Image: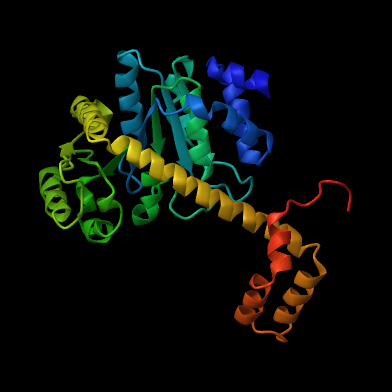
Length: 326
């Protein structure tokens, strides 16, 4: 895969698309690529755009892309979409919503299926971001699926988190306050040409007073109407201001280091779970234990603890299965 790595680092879009597909398929070659490019990551500014459905997130991403491109920056967009119950792929996605950017060689767009994962953000997005970063993207915009409070996972991938609301979202503030309100770096009341936008901004400002934040960064509350680009320049300026703040306060490096630690632990957990599921199919002791539990001959909790206390089974789960014939 060395040739593919070199093409990726040179910004080849076809190679980038192919490597993302390998990640989605769980191909082990992708792990080798990620190891090779790791030292070439960390330059891009990752911006997460979250909020409830109907808040205009895709339009905001579209307008921010326009601004970044006008300044000569390359942009990558990751649109997380609901999973199709039939194909398992993303249902609609930014391929439809942002067609005009497909002719721009400085913009790369990829839809990723949520695959039902909690938090509205599949874990594969973290690896996809590293590929995009290494390929030369200056700005990476991640738009979440829009499931409300459970979108806390966006803080695990983004340097700057934008929370988009609309004037009609007033009743949702109480629910949001205990969740995503706490991880937003910038708030925007989109579709501000509607009645109630100013009141909504005041409600958000009041709710923020109950949420913890960085001591030297007070999340601004902006009014935007993305469909007409109203307020988008101010939003862009605040995004740059936030990145400057993170850099000067040494928080950007801290955030990224914490995300790398979390990704390591999540990967270990996922891989151990995958290997265990594979061993359940082949290990006689595990098959017997599972059968006894299913038939009511063993209590699930205590049976599971007995297996976890077995040194032999722990070693088995940590050992990859042979790829040869059964």
